[in-house]
Amino acid sequence: MRRLGRPRIKRVSPAEKRVLVLTCEKAMTVKEICECLHLAEATVENHRSSIYRKSKLVPFDRNAVKLAWWALREGYIKIPDPLPRNWFLSVENLAIRSGDKVRKP
Image (cartoon, rainbow, N blue to C red; front, side, top):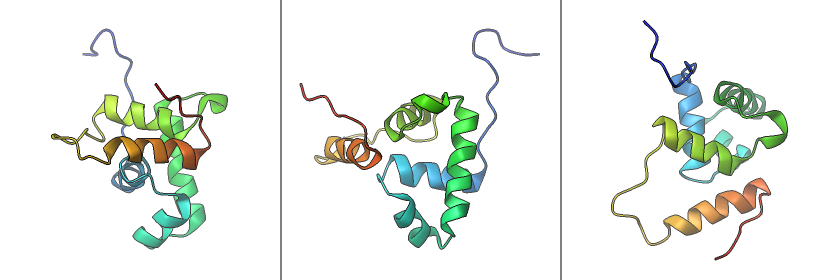
């Protein structure tokens, strides 16, 4: 029986999860992920495309920061407790690397 409220979301594969974690928690670029996981750039891009498709972020709204919020909400990544001093800098770095604008308080 299907739960009411939240729509059913396709789960990401283990390989996609590794790419997702490196993208969101470590703020790595595609090239850095390729070097870390020993994958071709096209493979990493395919995993990212699949993750975006499963997250149901619309094409014009796809960016690394929104992907990180989705991954956090769905439980793929966790906010460390206690927060390391540089954690917010890592989130800002993720936004800068993805080309998103960061709003300063």
